[in-house]
Length: 383
Image 1 (cartoon, one colour):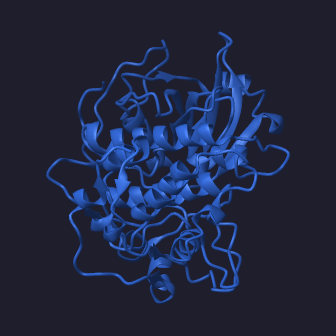
Image 2 (cartoon, one colour):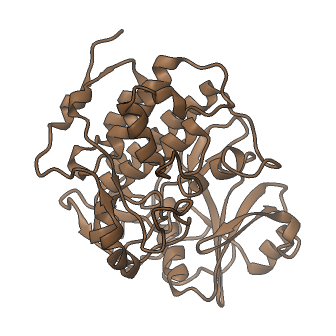
C-alpha cells in the first residue's frame, strides 16, 4: 500500500513493476511505468477514433496493451502547470487505495513533458455519457440500476472519507467522474483534485477547484473545504441520476431554477415525483421519494447540517424514516458569468478569483447559524 509518505509534494521512491527506469520523485509501489511509445502504440498514435473523454486537464483514449488488456489512457495537458501537480497527486492517491467502487490505476508515464495516467477500462463510459449525454451514446438505465449506482457511489465516497488513511476529500464528484463497468456498477475516478485529511484536521482553506453546478456554497465562496463539500456534490449527482438531467445544462420552471432549487420547490408543493426522469415508467415510488429527500439533506446550505457519507449510505440502503423536521433549504452557488435567466452554469473549472467575483451572485437560502444534531436526520424504525 505504498511507503507512507504524505507530505505536500514530498515523495518517496518506490519500485516499478516494469523493467523501465523509475521516474524520480513519484511513489508508485502499486503501479507500472509505461514508455510514451508503448502508449502511443496502444492508442494507434492517440487516434481520434479512440478518444473516449476529455476536458479539464486532459484527454482520455481507449488503448490496448501488448498483452491484450484494454485500458483508458489519460493524457494531461502539457501546457497546464496544474496538470503536473494533478498527475503527481493522482498517482499518490490511487496507488495507495483499493475499493470496488474506485477506479483502479494501472500505471503512468512521465517522459519529458508527457504526463499520462493509465486506468482500468470501463465498458460503459461515464454517467455523463451514458445517462446525461447525447442521444447517440445514451443508454437506458432502469430504476434498480440507478439505485445501485447511487448506493455504490455513496459507498465508495464513504470509504474515501472514513476508511482511507489519511482520509480523502475528492473535490470533484460529478457525473463525468462516475464511470460504469460492464454491469453498470459505478467506480469513482479522477483524483487529481483530491485533498488528504489527517485525523486531526477538520477543514482546510484552499484554492477552489471543481465544477460549477456541483460546488458547495461555502467552498465556492470561501475556499473552506471539508468532507461536506463532497456530500453536497453527491446530493447534486443523486438528483441528476433520478431526473436524468444535467445540473449544469438545464433550468427548470418559469423561474429557471437550478436542479437543487427545483427539487426543493417540488417538495414544498408536494410534487416530488415530478422530478423523476420521464424515461422511467416503472419504479418504487417510496424509494425514489426517499432518494430525493436524501439529496436534499446532502445539499443543505449549512455544511454542518449535511449528513456524513456513512449516514448517506445508511439512508439510501435501508427503509428508514427520514426526519424532515431537520431538513433546511439548499444552498446554491452561481458564478458571476451565470445570470438568473441563463440556461444554467457552464460545466468548467472554477478558481478562487471566480469565487470572489461570484460572492454577490451566490444564493444561500436561509443560511442558519445553528444546526441540528446530524443523528436526528434519520429514525431507524423499519417499515
